[in-house]
Image 1 (cartoon, rainbow, N blue to C red):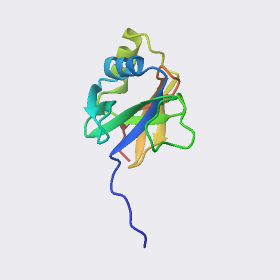
Image 2 (image 1 turned 120 degrees about the vertical axis):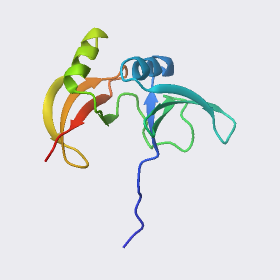
Image 3 (image 1 turned 90 degrees about the vertical axis):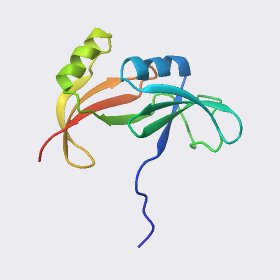
Length: 134
């Protein structure tokens, strides 16, 4: 049997404008933006939520090594939330972010979820989900 990973530490989101991205993910999705000094001495940007982290790379100035074809708007991310989707929908309406679809039932990593969909400033698909009982 091969070795197996146990969890996701972070992922990288390639973006057009890190300030616009950080504002969206903090103001709309409630994440915390941070700057950190990487091991190479460069200052980088990231978004934190729970025990997860999204590192931000600027398109055309990505850090090495990087994905073979990094592009803004190419991500499809699903975030679990304990906040009811109706509260999310009211919040998104208040901040002027349209819901593209939902609520719709989907299958998540650990079982059934109920989801709504929206887009971030670069066009990446964002899914916000509540876990459902089996």
